[in-house]
Image (cartoon, rainbow, N blue to C red; front, side, top):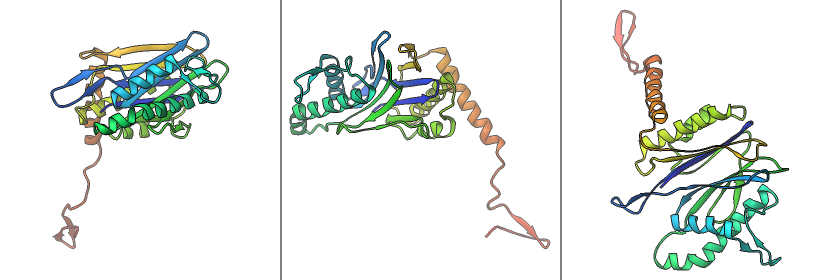
Length: 258
């Protein structure tokens, strides 16, 4: 299992991903799930993956090496896609190609073909965009009304994003909220864990502003986790206790609410 989230705000894009993979309780490893494709001044593209590691790694490799378009005979790569939309379409075609090639063998071995991607960034001359691409190769695009997407073990971190992120959120506030979302997921699911990879891309910069890995024991992330826990405890203590079931005095007699 994994957890990846991407937030697209007015100022730019934040994408984070954990690195934990496991093939059983005694086989836990660390693999990078957040990939960067960039050509200075031309494009900066981020791709985060969840699902079967062998499938996602094959997809990422083919995006760089290229896949022949049967209609034109041209070998297409993510480095030459003319727009973000066309790049998302290419990712979908690569996923379907990998399914056609490897799917039967995986099915025979009773291994599920499973991969999901978050794809975001900007190509010079076009807008910054963010997509979620499914294992069937189809995709949806992030909107201003809901300026984030998630893949993997998303249910624990979603309430944080729902309440705190909007299109006008500051870029680094978006990063902070995404990290709180990651912490909430890590506390509730042991299959998601450190290190965490981060990419921050400012709109129209056409280059990453921040590429960083949070390792175990990093002071800022440890402090963020402690402050968030303290803030939650203080918030719930500040809310009045529910009145339900408290004894009520009516006409000099005590009675319960039922």
